[in-house]
Amino acid sequence: MDYHVKKFRDGQVTATILKEGNLAVSLRGNSYEDLFTAATIKEAWDAHHCLDKTATATLTLYCLIGQRSDRRFHEKKSFDLKVIARFINAMKFDRVSVLHPHSAVSLALIENSVAIDHFEYVQQAYQAIGTDPVLVSPDAGAYKTTHQIAERLHADLIPSNKVRINGKPVISIQGDVKVKECLIVDDIADGGRTFKHLAEALKNQGASKVFLYVTHAQFNYGFEELKEHIDHVYCTNSYRDIDDAYVTQYDVI
Image 1 (cartoon, rainbow, N blue to C red):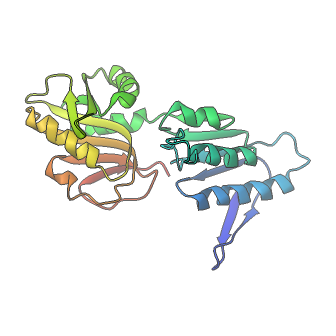
Image 2 (cartoon, rainbow, N blue to C red):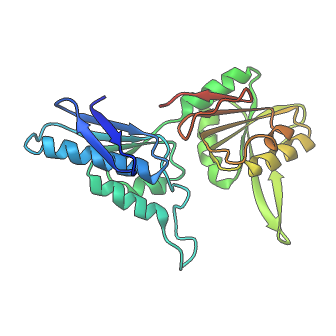
Image 3 (cartoon, helix red, strand yellow):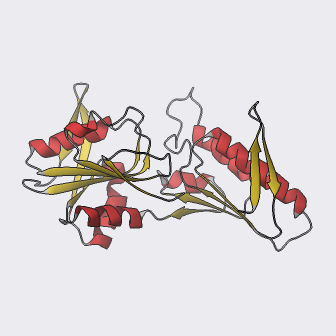
């Protein structure tokens, strides 16, 4: 730990640098308060190292807030990720590492940014299941990343997609899952209802078991609905810590 952070009762955050040299800030990064904490730490470090041009400062965000808002969804709506990226860029870190960004837009907007590979956590989930499950990409946007993971695991891959017909969502599964165990792989679970419907569709087509891996596990509405069709959840603790036997969580922070 290169720094100490103190939070006052009114919400103010202050930082103290504890030792000389390079700075490494690691935060969940899933709240605006996290970003202000990073900015406070960096300001203290900049003031102390203003004459030391050899020292470097790095920021690791295990769950980047706003990453799904990677475009302007309506001409009258804010481009939230752009606002967040500007704030991060203003801190002027030498490198910003982001675990499993939702899309390439995050890395394009954040200067000096690199992605932290999530493969090792998917691999742990895959091996924990122990039956060489078929990987399932939940939508067209996740297909490329899931395809790369399937190649590294030497696993089979079945794409799926959700389209609206007459205003109703219809899930299309492009492969045979009969009597197979399936592992859905994605980056973020907010409520998880999309995964529930996909798991239901997989089982309706004969899948024997359905598991879910997500890197950033919010699950804001709990797990009761998911348990109807998803046999087990695997995730990291990038967003929060979860204490539930239904969930296997891998520590990243």
